[in-house]
Picture 1 (cartoon, rainbow, N blue to C red):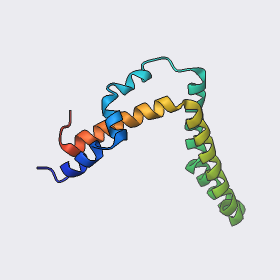
Picture 2: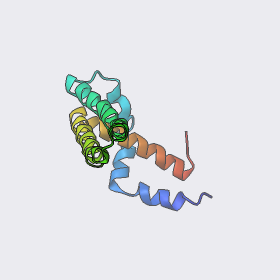
Picture 3: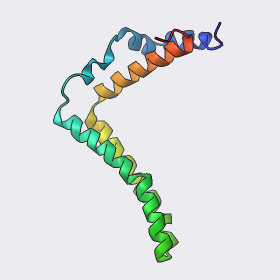
Length: 119
């Protein structure tokens, strides 16, 4: 008997998990052609990854070469914060239905793994 089975039973009893389990094939929406708004949102999400740590690393190199540590101390958090805002805008534009479908699928897979009933 798995140590995680009692935990899996408690998780399965929640309303959100019951909804996820009854949702069936939630990934069917990924087979449909997304709207332009969803493409723009996914593009913004990808751009946010480029703005994040790579831009902060470049600011670090720039700060080192010009000898101004404030370039990184101020610009790093600002750049990283900007990447979060771009990510959130992309998430909003990409759409709630995609995020919910993916969360339901992931929850079903995680619960199956916890309970020892993996496909």
